[in-house]
Image (cartoon, rainbow, N blue to C red):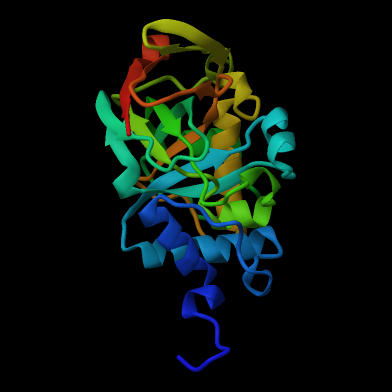
Amino acid sequence: MPDGLPPPALNDPASMLVGAWHARTRIEGLPDHARPQSRADGYVIQRALVSKSGEQALGWKIAATSVAGQRHIGVSGPLAGRILASRFQSNGTLASLRGNALRVAEAEFGFRISRDLCPSSTEPLMVAEVMAAVGFAFPAIELPDSRYGDFVIAGEAQLIADLACAGTVIKGSETGHVWSRGALANHRVKAYRNGELVAEGNGANALGDPCVALTWLANELITHGSYLAAGDVVITGTCVVPVPVSEGDVVMVDFGTLGHASVTLTD
């Protein structure tokens, strides 16, 4: 390479993020000349990251579904990110915390989409329409992560580019459910660490209602040239205060009638 020319990755933000993702390392941020300047720019880089990762994208996550969470990372609203196959695990498995920058566990409502939610008009999708496309619900744990050294100051465009702090997702068993907004908003959720109850919450902590959060995602994706597709899984944001975790911890989330999910954390 001639002197004075930057390495190719420095001109390719998606490749920089893919490298950090695979190595479980962090970068200080994307170079100024390659940094996304808007949410739309962030989603463009996110799509490129998924393509360059060589992995199957299994669905979506929603980050920053509470006002407190949005203020903490300085964003204007929720963020959508892809879930990659290598970090999607079944219930009761082991999950590595190696390189994880956040080191917390979150209890989240999960949904599996049963039919495509493509735009049929210029009007936004409504909650009833979106929930009619849900086949199953499931309890989930997310171990969010960031490829940035200080994700709190990265800004929403860079965070979106980085899969919206996607990490490892542990999926509980799927179950059918009567989709009542009030029922999910008020549905109690408990989180246990090493057998001790450490956090409690309800569905209202995810954008007021997991059904509303899922509808936000469906419309956000359409706005940015994508859509929820049949077979996609979605986790809709934490229902409890994120639980600090370390290697060796066993985390279990209890969603009552919707079941539970658990994971043992390793290095």
